[in-house]
Amino acid sequence: MSEENSARDRVWQQIRAGRTPSAQAVDAIAERESVRLGSVGVASLRDELRSEVLGAGPLEPLLADPAVTDILVNGLDGVWVDRGEGLVRDPTRFSEVDSVRRLAVRLATLAGTRLDDASPWVDGLLPGGVRLHALLPPLVAGGAHLSLRIPRRDSPGLATLRDWGMLDETVECLLREVIQRRVSFVITGGTGSGKTTLLGAMLQAVDHSDRIVLVEDTRELAVRHPHVVRLQGRSANVEGRGEVTLTTLVRQSLRMRPDRLVIGEVRGAEVREMMSALNTGHEGGASTLHANAVADVPSRFEALGALAGLPTDAVHAQLASAIRVVVHLTRDQGNRTVREIGVVHRESGDRLATVIPALGPDGESAHGWALLRRVLDRQVIGSGLGDLRPAEG
Image (tube, rainbow, N blue to C red; front, side):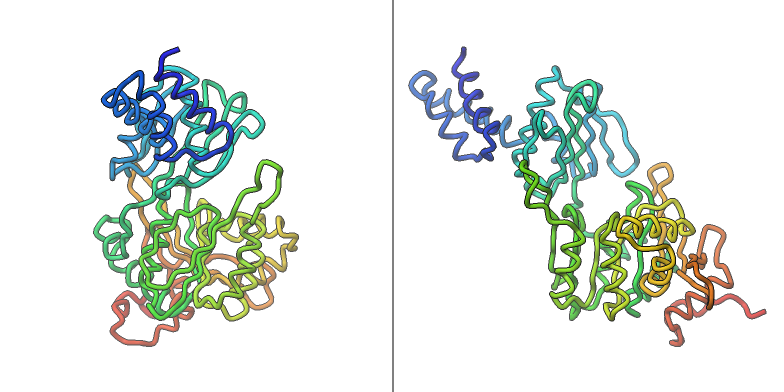
């Protein structure tokens, strides 16, 4: 066995034992070969080990590319990347199944989690904020599969998103009104539609005197604001203990005097605590939600409410007063755009809440626009939207 392979084996023994590798540990292992390799050989071995153990191997150049937002490794079947215009195949390849597995195990260790046959999937956060999901065979075929979501290195504001074409001047003005009037809202759309990006941009417009308490399962949201408190969930350990759910974090956040309660993504039983908080004086809250259209939002909340044991009537009653505005995003041929803005509405005596479209691809809806104006309490002339009011009659 060569000295290089011997050194690598020692590194991997530590990783499999659950010890997070460090630059100091890697250097110490390389130094053990100084007698055989000499100073030049040790330096070369140290650089190789650092790249292999502390970096992302062949994915390192992709992680360094500022345009890349997602990296998907489908075992030996190939690597796909998203640079903002949809997924495209990348020439990066792995030569063997074991090399993909070693990378997945190493990244899981760097995320402070365990990935092996007894625990064949992981969802964690790498140093630097990259979100990792990995899955091992036999749950997938053709080798380990990895999904890396890379956080934005910048935090664009609404004006920047307008320049990018995600929204126009009318929508920008409306979204600023939503923030300034402390109206609770939810941003909907499919995976990769830009929900997190838009939420971060809107939170930039929050008054700097407000305290934002942000609850996330895994840290993804970039917020450029002077007073942000971050709460992050935690998965159970190998023994099945130590889990901290979003439901628990939302309850804890209410004791932290939030001016704005923000849940990065509502997708489970925490919806009960969120709606309860927004119905008891915590105005201006926000979240994101997977949905295909604004009209689907009530049914999505019904499904989430069922996970929390809430009956349908209770979900609709709370939804109608907890969330007032829905902003829906779509992604078409790589272009992310605000497609629709709706108002959550419940007629007097009606048991169900609905979302009435106010702005959409076909322009304004008179009824929805009137409801939106009522929600925003728009009585200030010259706010930038007066000329957009639908004609009377």
